[in-house]
Length: 128
Length: 510
Image 1 (cartoon, chains in turn yellow, green):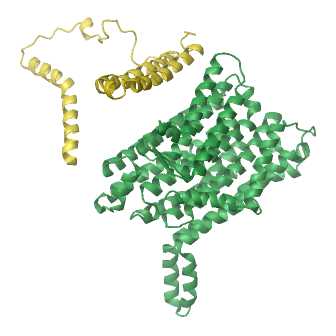
Image 2 (cartoon, rainbow over the protein chains, first blue to last red):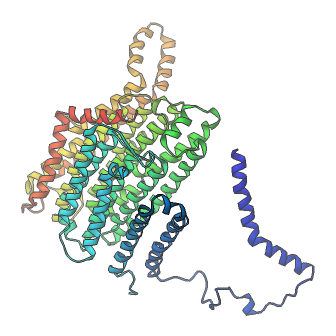
Image 3 (cartoon, one colour):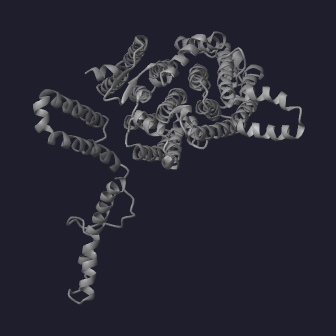
């Protein structure tokens, strides 16, 4: 029973690894078989950053002020993680405990909103 | 809804934390009455739960309120009140006083939840909530020392949380349950195949909790954090946080791993015995060389954690008094250490130094503080008639009892007749009764600790003061140290109520 359970996890790991690895391997094989051209140029070799041109190296130093925004972002991140399953289960929750389930989510969002209000009030959203 | 009534004391503190932060960001306002009010209400509520005498479970058994959790709820709430009253001069002078109060309340509320947790997930959530609040508290003074303390505490805390979680994952993987009862059922079945994995799992869990208790070798953060953090925060860490750490260790190892009855009991008895001996010896030897009072108290708290861990070893070795010994020790330690820390807070606020040499002649500048600090140091050493003496006697006695040494010595007389087997028997007996060796180490360590505790007391009483101006201390602070000193003497002379409460609380774990 336990090997079977871990087997599924193992299968997922193999799938996850092969997803990025497979295109690279296929591309290399096609190159070896002389079935694809190879004409590198600086633009093609550049790091793909959603169309934005990259600046400097990855080892450059980042401004410490970014971390406050990263922390603020966590508020919304956590909100989505927890609200998503809640929303999915609304179909059944709305029948059994319609108001209570809304109230619970409201309390949860209230706590997060207070966190954001606190950060805002203390000037965490100002670029100083 | 009934679930929320069960965890009401913790909820009150967490809600009050939110209220305090809200008031703090909406402008100037008085916070102290709200904070103290919430603590008092939570404490009274916890006492009422205890007086009801019934065990209550909530959230599908993830939380369990029993005499054990009530004992710690009262201890933690009382310690937090003492810290806030004793440290109010410092807190009220800070721009971030709202944050200090709010984080302390959040941390205390999570500690109450931690002592009530009966489920691995609940334990982890509560432990992290209390820890994260403490990481920020340690760094809240924003000077170099305090920031260093906060960062060190955060890094070591994160690593130990990961180790703890790894252990939890093993426990869950083996038993298929996150509830302590489910794990207990697995351990009770005594599966030989799972033995090694189980030992590995609980070693990881002990390492994770060892960080909270600050026992060697998971202590490295303690001296730096104790020295760097504001003294108010240090006192909170050394009393409330440590008590909560021992509480959850007792619950996990007693309920989840079957206490002294389980087939792996001997293994963890040895583990805690070794950790206790290491903590006491390292903590005391390192404390000998300290010149900074907060650092000295940091090492002293490692050594005291070693003393308490002797009780954990005794529990595992099957002592009936081990668990209540740990509880009694924590109760007396709270009074003693709070007394010492509030005195240190009051003194360093005035003389602007944490060096022992600057305490010279304190007895002439403030007889009240010097007297109470000396009393607390005597109690930390374990000198009668203070509470520390009885606590040590109680916990060491439980270890001796668990080792079976008394029957051993009575058998020894009969064996005297034939000499050669006698020596072999003696060696066998000592190896078998290794817990006695731990107690011997503990008693030797008490002698070592007397050196640095009493040296500090001598500096205060005998040395010439650099200046003779009297130190003025507000009535509130004087009251707190007086109550702490009263506790030290009371638990030393009339310990019965506290021992009864400790035994009652420990019995709830069965």
